[in-house]
Each structure stands twice: as C-alpha cells, then as structure tokens.
Image 1: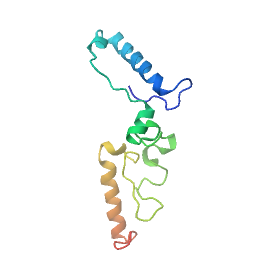
Image 2: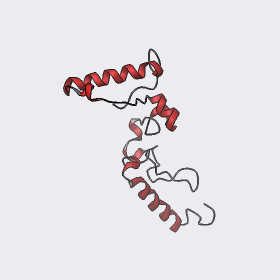
Image 3: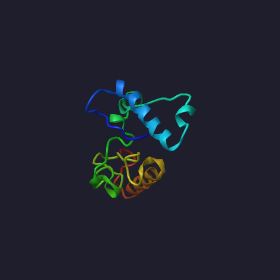
Image 4: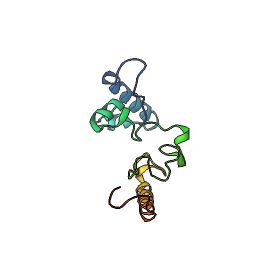
Length: 129
C-alpha cells in the first residue's frame, strides 16, 4: 500500500508498522483467498523508514505533498513552470516539477530546452551562470 501518515494520532511506527502490514495482508486475503499463506517474506517501510533510509521528507516520494495551487503548471510553485528559479542559473527538473514528475523524463527535457533558450537569449551567461 502507499500513502500512510507520517504522524500517527496514537502510537509510533516502530510498533504500528507490523500491525498495518497485518491489516493490509488481511484485506488483500479477503479478495484474494490464500494470499496470506502465500507470503514468504515481507519488508515494511513506514514513512519514517523512508525518511531515515532514503532521505525522503516525511516519507513522501514527491518531496512533500502538493497543494491544489502546485498542480499542473504550478509545479513546484506558481511561476516556475518554465523550470527557472529566482536563483540565476538554477533550474529544476526533478519529480516535483511539471509535467507528471520525473518518471517520464519530460521535466528534464523541458528544463534543458529552457536552459538552451535562456543561453541563446543571453539570460544565462555561458561563462558565469
């Protein structure tokens, strides 16, 4: 499963991790009989584990939750849809950028196009970005 809360109302992930995994396994077993018996091993990663092991803030693969204003052309913040940031020479092209995150490769392609455009129009100095 995906998208568990980082902060729990009661308890902590060191205890609740296994309980949640058991519950998810039980739910799957309800619609896929004998699923539970077929599991030979499992590795449960809570949001805390994802943050600790991989540096994902609060275990979020998208560098934090997006709000409505950050979707589509507003990713990661309104006005940055051209991949240029307020820092001269710094461009964004990761999973948090439009369109659809880094899975497609489109953000990197689009950022490279913006860099070349800025370079040609002298908005980006070739010797001193």
